[in-house]
Image 1 (tube, rainbow, N blue to C red):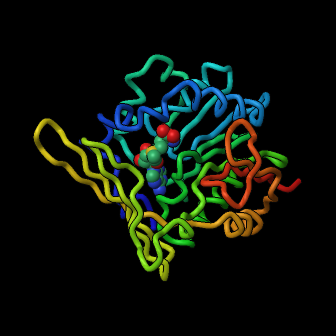
Image 2 (image 1 turned 30 degrees about the vertical axis):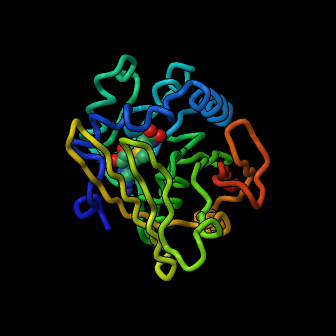
Length: 247
Ligand SMILES: C[S@@+](CC[C@H](N)C(=O)[O-])C[C@H]1O[C@@H](n2cnc3c(N)ncnc32)[C@H](O)[C@@H]1O
């Protein structure tokens, strides 16, 4: 599927409120270890962010001295990025990160904040790994931050699991185990108006990602449960995995 047909879930009405609605992800306690980790991997080379969004990670990584490029489907998200100081240092290409090629060679490609799950078929996720690998120099790394599917935390016999419950925000995931899909439902108050957005995802296990990496000529180098290199265990809710392009 190309970007022509791919639906933009981060368009008008979402992009302007993205930074506020994800404010916990902009906490320096989240950003700094992420940027440290990615800057180490990039070394002296350039980095490519798939799904760069409003530049939550790309801007501080660029300020750290790494040359950063980005791909994103959403012109509205990129417009938010463009309005921020330092954005002129970052070259962004509008397109689908499963297929869009950016000129240049990179020591690092990265895809954070569960964004691999925005690709809702296995074929698209495989294509994304192949596209990331195609941008990397031999020995370059592809880093992905994504949640571990929370199936063991679903109440028995249920398919729905809440992830946010506050007086002004409600969010829950609705799983479809047969198709390895889930829909995240978000509801929030704007003044006295209730707004809602439902976004489809494809959840994916670490082992399946390892296989996608192998299909793309990359091998698992490290896997952690957090950006401070916390160990990955059976209880971990997310992982940061790094695959290295074979030399
Ligand atoms: C959850 S946001 C993450 C943005 C940013 N990486 C961050 O960490 O704040 C997901 C971003 O990925 C973009 N995106 C989703 N699917 C995409 C695709 N197939 N190709 C390009 N961009 C995509 C969205 O437009 C959005 O900007």
